[in-house]
Image 1: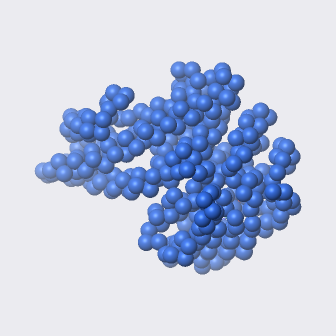
Image 2: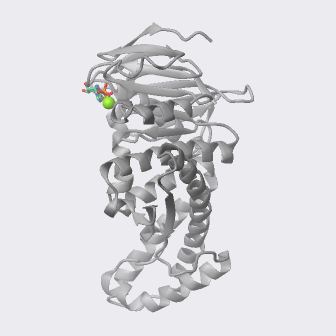
Image 3: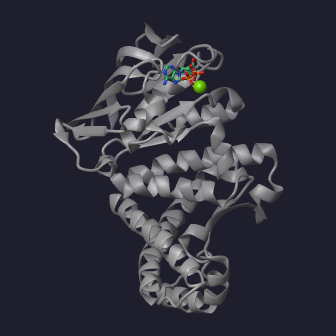
Length: 371
Ligand SMILES: Nc1ncnc2c1ncn2[C@@H]1O[C@H](COP(=O)(O)OP(=O)(O)O)[C@@H](O)[C@H]1O
Ligand SMILES: [Mg+2]
């Protein structure tokens, strides 16, 4: 898929922007604080329905304005066109349309435009705590499988209610069974989806990483569940292990007033040649791990949805050494890519691209690709 056109009005520092893109590589050069990330954020917003930088939609509206509007024209690989529109106002109304048809829920947007974003903050997937890694898995799975997004929402709702029930049980009798049954049902669905996804992603990441490290390193992704289970368990088996362990934990859970087991406590581990990357990996290995992961994400999305997503590379090129840049650029042949950078350095070697200059909320095209 590729984005043909975007239009923004009163969005971040774009008062009014209309832009055509190349279906291949689009490079945006500009100094700091000119609007490069804002543009990628707008694309991401129209894919996911929320920003990757803020939980408050109001931040996206140009400071002095009451509302904003964003429109994007998408072309699927089968030639089908999709028009995505999102309107925002300060009263927290978010209105979204696909091909002119209003959506009841923003989540219905998922799966129309698929994106993979790679920014310097992605190093946090390795460095930070488990919640960053769960967010990473949840983000991808929600795009690939809209049903997953729904189940995750249900699970989070039940989790919240169950935690309230646990707190209540400190003072009076509460029957936890109905909460347990639902937590286990939705929780197991999530775990099964995630394990399957990580299995596929692990194979691809390993391949990418071997290539980038010239066969020197073996990278492995391991889904670490809070539920003590063997490697390959059936849906029913996971359910019953989950339920049994939940019973054993009950006393402690009531005391602490929180649910201590389930996919909300799970983690993803990265290992290079058998060693944990977060604990023992060098800065360089951690970066390469993220690069391998991002390249694998593109492939798994292609595998699961039938077409490559759009790739957003925010300020990462200059952080990669020469041959990693080459590896990355080479793998982008059939993928529409948006690259931002503060300098032209290392952009010259990109053969066929649209080149834009970003300055103070305005974008000028400097060079059009020959296609
Ligand atoms: N809601 C908003 N309204 C107006 N300007 C905004 C808004 N949000 C951010 N900005 C401005 O956008 C600029 C940052 O843009 P950004 O895309 O992050 O820069 P960069 O080019 O470095 O990636 C800053 O000048 C900031 O003041
Ligand atoms: Mg930026």
